[in-house]
Length: 209
Image 1: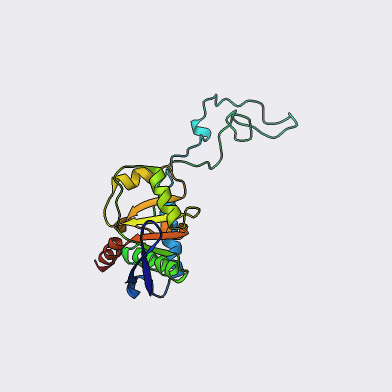
Image 2: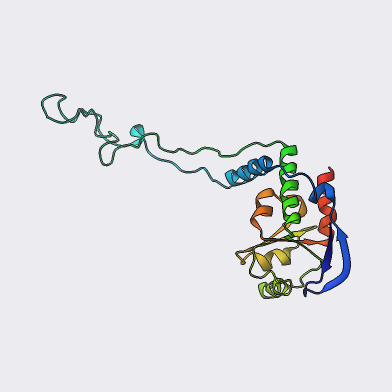
């Protein structure tokens, strides 16, 4: 598959790039995508939630009433979960949500996601550019020129660019990542993926390792 290279103004440069079939044209594996997306979302959870059970509640352990003759159910402690202020039954406690996934499965998931985006024509190739200053307004003009201002975009860079990062961090529907940190969830979440010409070569190097 060949894609036209665009300028940041939206005009065509007259050049074309050919997408590598080994990256953008494989047989997609939906289960690998599911596993990797699940792993990513699990890693976003802090796991710091906590609740107090009977042993964590302050209160007397004295039997609060006699067992028989009251006409009501037995009650052995004021910390009973049935009472207001009592402990919680089987409440959550801090723990890790991290999931382990083999490297080959993660690579397969990313390749499958990229293949789907290529088939849906949701990939746009832009010539390499840099920003002299960190200005959100300037980056919005770039998105407007490429006709993707109203869509969720993912810009893939060859190397870190601090000005680009600072220009986009206040935009809710825009994210900038390096080729080596690209993940399945972000690929699928974006409506349009913007690749710099140099980042396509970086992607090939990442998956060739």
